[in-house]
Image (cartoon, rainbow, N blue to C red; front, side, top):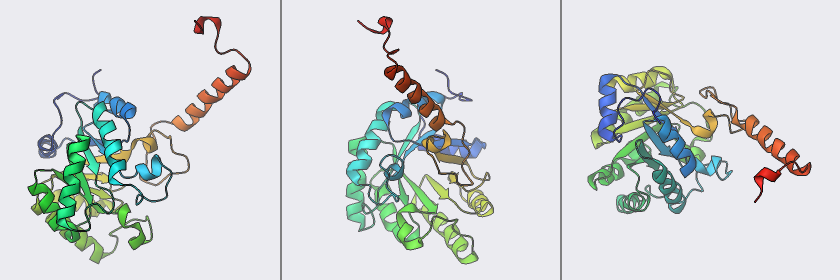
Length: 273
């Protein structure tokens, strides 16, 4: 199956993302957690997939990402890896697996890479975690940074609102972005920050900048696949565009199944052995 607008069918690497930025080709990325959906996204021609610790919310029903463990992430990541041939596969390092000290962070990073087979890892934070980022990269593991709204720090912020609206926080975010690039990150995700600031980061940095709720002046976009396909009910942030209404369509499909079972019209004689 040919992907949408995809001419280069080679495996996407961190180098390929860099080439895309240099050519002005936008990067399409989605967050996914399972094998079946990963196969579909890869067949569609997606450039990159993220196994987010947002699996805590989407797959398990938690209100924050904090309950995700390294075992949870390896389970989801290895499932996704088995379904992907072309897209770059990035996995979140969950809360508590890299904040303690660099040695522990490197050990956990290596474990995720070995047991999941993913291509790269994503870490939340700026200058506060820069030494850990450097050590993981020195171990040969590609790292994507994550700035702006960092859900693992929700108890610190106390809100899921837009970040870096004031001058001081915006200045720190820009400084953090430069620090992550200098440390060796191959890309940075910017979540829920003013579009003008995100554009400035993308313009100043050589590496790709992926936005979620960060406007269009970045190098690519990422959304959670269940959100953009309309499978999640009651989640309607300003930045989310829903391309389908699968929640309604699934309810209708299951409703028709229930009706057929109760009216004994399923299975028919042709559907039996």
